[in-house]
Amino acid sequence: MFDAIAGGLVVSCQAPDGHPLRSPDVIARLARCAALGGAVAVRVNGPQDVRAVKAAVDLPVIGLHKVRAADRYLITPHRPLVEDLAAAGADIIAAEATGRGDLSVAELVRCTHDLGLPLMADVATAAQGLAAWAAGADLVATTLSGYTTDSPQGTQPDLALVSNLAVAGVRTVAEGRLATAAHLRDAFALGAFAVVVGTAITDPMALTRDLVTAIAR
Image 1 (spheres, rainbow, N blue to C red):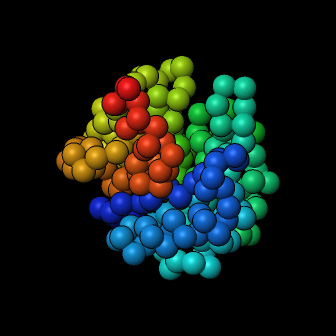
Image 2: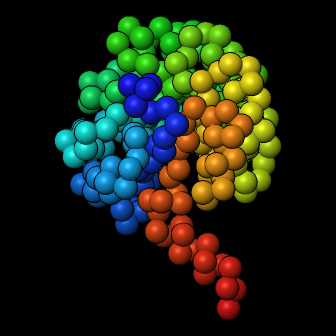
């Protein structure tokens, strides 16, 4: 599975509650578009969407389950959520390794591996990424940089974090605010194992809003 993902583009096919695209059938169609476009895997939120996407595409599915907290969404913070994603057919489990969930990183790794699945640890900082890798995470993603108080804020991807983890020998997935071909080329040049793009591909509402804001009538 890692060979299939290495050097490729993973497309995050997600839509929150209240979004016009919020339907498992629509998410599956987005995944199908991603597959036809050449994506090597898709990243999907919730067991219902995982099932729909697994039925629609023959690609590895990275499953996660977002849970709303006071400040942001937490990514698969509880053991039952991991088990539900595995039962739905996820090929890789994505869960945050920031200390916000019920499980320590070591427990999260053990729980996921006991289910026979690899773990993608979503982190915000280099320290979190190195700790997750040392604990046995199979992939470390920069997903949460910019979304926590201890990580750099901004509109651009945190390529410094990608570089710092990759230089340390971590199998690093660049994720978070990647939106252009230049971003992807830079991430791979800095040692990324794979890259994840979401909003810039699968959220026409956000793309429209950005363009409308840019013209500022």
